[in-house]
Structure formats: C-alpha cells, structure tokens
Image (cartoon, rainbow, N blue to C red):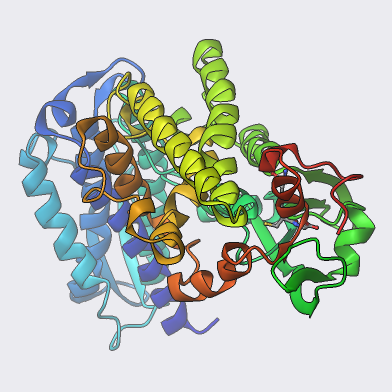
Length: 469
Ligand SMILES: N[C@@H](CCC(=O)N[C@@H](CS)C(=O)NCC(=O)O)C(=O)O
C-alpha cells in the first residue's frame, strides 16, 4: 500500500471512530456523562477526554514543523503521557463534541501529506523518565484510532450499566469486525415479493441485517388458466404455476417462506419453514451467535419468561384474528361473509389495542422494543389498504374511517412500525401489490390459503392434503 493510501486508510478509520464517539455523545446527557460508572470505575467523560487527548497529540503531528536531529528530519509531537487531568472536555459534552467535529473535518485533508513521513513521539517509560520513539504519521494516526476503539469498548460497558441503547459495533476493533463478518450466519431465503407470510421473515432478516446475511430467491409465480373445475366460480383461475424446483427440493409443500441455513463451505444445512417459526429461528440464531449487545434488539424477550409467553400467545392470536380474515374478506364473494370478516378484524384491532396500552411506547413490548408479535401482524396491517380499493369505503381501515378511540393504539402502532428503517426496506410497491392481490379480490386465486377459505375454514387452517390446487 502506498504511504498516501496508508494515511488515507488511517484517517478513514479515525473518522469512523470519531463518528462513533459523536453518536454516543448524542445519546447521553450531561448527568450520565459525568456519573461514575461502577463497572469501569470512571466516568464516560474521563474516557472521552483521555482518548481525545491521544487523538490531539497524533493530529498535532500533521501540522508540526520538521526538526533536524542527529540522523534525520522528523515531526515531533508532545508527550502522550503528559495529559491535563481534568479539562473541560471531561465534564462538558458540547466541548467534547466541538473538538470531535474539528477532528472529523481534519480527516478530509491529507493531500499534501505522506503516511511514511517520520515523526518522533514521546512516552513516559518510568515515573522519572521519558523516552523518544521514532514513528510515522500514518502509524500514529492509526494508533490513536485504535486506542480510542478500546476506550469505546469500556464506555460501552458504562452505557449498558446506565441502560442506554448501544450499537453492537461500538468499541469493536476492525479486525474483530472482519472476523465477525466471516462468522455471521448466512441463509438462502426462498421468498415471494408479494407474500405477507414471507414478509414476516423478511422483516426479521432486515431487522437483524447487521448480524447475518442472506440471498433472496424469488420462488413463486402465477399463471392464468381456464376455469377447469369451476372451483373458483369466477370463470377464471390463477395458479401458482411456477415453484422454484430448488424450493420443492428443500420443502416438498412448496411454501414460502422457506429458510435454508448455509454453512461457511457453501453447503446447505438446516431448513426451516412456517413464517412465525422462521421469525423465531432467525432471532434465536442471532442471539446464539452474538457476543452481547443490548437485549432490546432481540425480537423475543429471551430473559423474561412471562413476556416470552405473552409474545407466543399474541403472535398466534393476531395471526388468527387479524391476518386470516384478510383472506376471507377477499376470497369470499358473499357480501354478508365479507361484512362478518370485516367486523372480526375491527374487533381484533380493538383487542390488540388494549394489549398495546398495557406497556409503555407504541409497540407490543415496552419501550418500543420491536418483537415477533409486531412482525406477525405488520405485513397484513400494512396491506389493509387494499380493502377500500376492492371492497369500497364500507371496508376502509384508516384513522379517518375508524376515528373511535379504541382503534387509536393500533394506528399509532402501525405508524410507528411503518417508520422504522428496517421495515421501510421491506415494503412492496403499493400499486404493484394492489394489482397482484386482484387475483384474490376477484376470487380467482388458487393457493392453499385461498382453497381453505373457499371450502369454509380459516386461512391458517389450510391442509396440505385437502387444499391441493
Ligand atoms: N403457514 C404458512 C403459510 C405460507 C403461505 O401461505 N405462503 C404462500 C405465499 S403467500 C405460499 O407459499 N403459497 C403456495 C401455495 O399455496 O401453494 C406460513 O406461515 O409460512
């Protein structure tokens, strides 16, 4: 690597560490900044001051003049151990942020510098003695970044003690991150862009996208056919004519989502099906593979048996009461049956709202921790907009159409969910989905779920044997 590039790389690393510092300072208040953490026996401010002091010394080399000594010319910095013990940075977050921003700006300008430019730096080698060491610009900038990373790791412990949500990567050395990348779980994911069941799994995968990777395989397709057996009574019918052979090979029922765990050598390992199970599985895999991080990032409250059971009960409940009637309302051609399904959905929304109100925040678990329950329901709740389009205003689900206060917690929940970055990444295009769901709305769709509804049972009660199509 050229010396200019070495310096650029060191600056890039510095910038990322400085940005980590800035974002952590944005999530603490002055009280937390100056409170003694019993875990690290120091304050966050002391660690920030200490690591910024190192950065100051390293950055001062960039503008220090070259001195001639007996052998060569070299830039020289102050003594790394000669540190003011209690300057303002230690107690004043804004002061620390200002300095960090200055350094971030400085990382942009390296054009006229060489990474291998020699410099002399000084360390105390004993209580009485200081020693000069020869080094280079790139090495010192890199070292200061590295040093800050270790202090971030300690600060992370204090943040956890103060119950402040932390990014998992905070305080992790680049080498550790690179190693983690290799050991992250990897999946082959048989999915279909339109499928709300698969959408549950996609949400879980995207929620944990920092901790895993996956390859999406689009595995279902449709074809319009003659109405061969009058099953749909609509004069036409749609089939899942295309099922990826690779999907059938790993799951003979040919259903999405189907998740295949991949081993590092590229071979296939375990296969998991059923959207609610897949969602749990993804969370458990990430949990088993993780070396810590805030418990709140998990979709299951692993440490709380009671909340865990509440999640199980409500995942099942929303699936039956708020997801299945979606198909009844679309597939059934009888107005009364549709009205009944709609009324069931409204009752379900109200009951879910009562449960939402039991905890703080808009989501199912307290403090807006995203959970399997939120993901169990969201794909359908987000798709309710199709009712108005295909069934008219009488079937509209929106704040305006349902202003009663019993529905408010549900709409607040839906808005909160729809605004999450990981969720936004998973949403199909609304117009395209409307067109797709027309196959269900005109009653011509043939799938296991549609067959089940047609023969008079709920969507979740489809039977692999009976509901052949
Ligand atoms: N119980 C399954 C249902 C999944 C499901 O119905 N997926 C549809 C696509 S939205 C499917 O694969 N249909 C294929 C078929 O009906 O043959 C789950 O929760 O994963």
